[in-house]
Length: 361
Image (cartoon, rainbow, N blue to C red; front, side, top):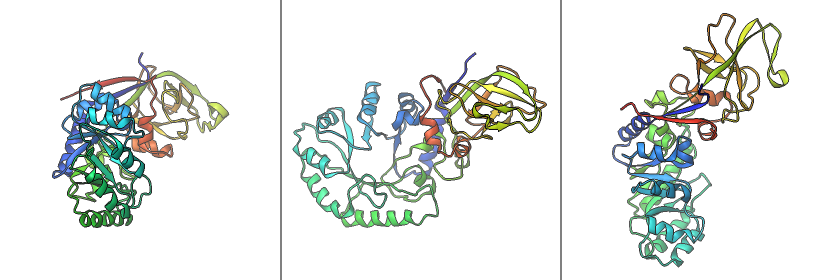
């Protein structure tokens, strides 16, 4: 009996990329596949998203894995390089880099490269994370344009802090700051939109869009699911029932007895736990999908098992399939019950989980 399985639909990934193309039809698409393809498998994801114009990763190790798998398209290091020793490696492997500090710029100027590197200049418009301030842009641009190690086609980029909140006025503040900066410095190539901005059309005239979570069928917007935006969940996380038992009114379940039965009922023990990456902090009532219905988690999540209340008249059997999230049960709902976000659930599955890739095209 197979227990915890993460089934990834390559067809869903392709479908979701097509939705990005429909929404951002005038922009090039950088498919963000950092963090092991948001937990879906870096190489398989990149291959499925081959119709994207480029790939975005966080670390140089991820870029190496893509190149080693035979992927020749442009790859951008979204956090840039961390050491001057990385700079020749970027040049040789045709990796593009974000520049967001003066230290990076100085190291780039001091390098001696045969092949210049394409640079994306990150401008902080209010998120106060990575990026140079607007009043540094003139100096950075002058130095980048004078540097023989930098190719001519510099892309100006920023990141929106609140794009998942459609009515948040700070989105328009950031966009206005970026737009003024771009116009003041006559920058023709830009990138602003993450998944949320793509869906809400917050910045429609970017040269590049950088979708991430929406490619995996998950909504970047608060209080919504991917299906509401014509996205298909790429991952179905599932397992099996390994035990069924009857309990009486008043019986307590699990470590510390955090749940107590209000009626005589049947429980199923399910083969998944925090050892597989299922969230230990999932609350009583967190839904799982079983035989066409939702049933609630009861008791604490253990390393290898969870327990659900089947109800007093259940007909479920040992070996029946249980879906923890996927098409039948939106991961966004599960994340809400766990006081977290879908991104974290996807990225924290462990190596004990069996991975299966399907393609229905």
